[in-house]
Image (tube, rainbow, N blue to C red; front, side, top):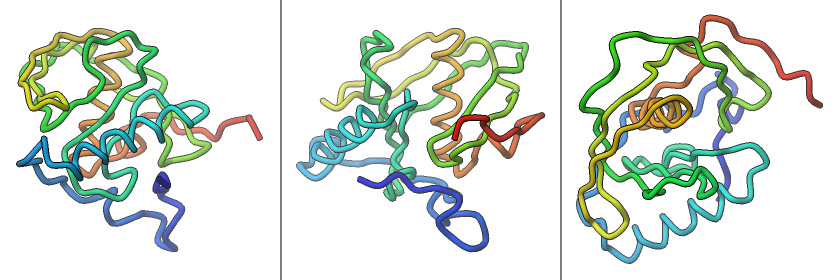
Length: 161
């Protein structure tokens, strides 16, 4: 799978990265199951990624996966919904596989509650704090057609070449 970048179109944005993704109706469909495996494989082979949303690989579906090394019970989030955000926001350093070479300070809630479905079609609830809460918000932004650079207070180019 190829990760879409905002640099792939002359206007500086890829249309699917800006569209609201559609809910997945048949989670157990063979093509959805294969897509989830392909997303995990793609994420594992990135150098810096810890999360990957379906729009980033060209599918308008409400799915994201997270790196297994984060130690979460769930690594697949289908049709996720944030049910509660903490009252305060904190500036957190953030980057994105679809915005290569850019980083920024992004306001994110420090904790949240979430409901989603796993790859077996089972609904689950989760609480997240810190980095995991940031990651969930970042990936759900992708599913809603937003990029971190839209809300970052300071953007900078990476010094790595």
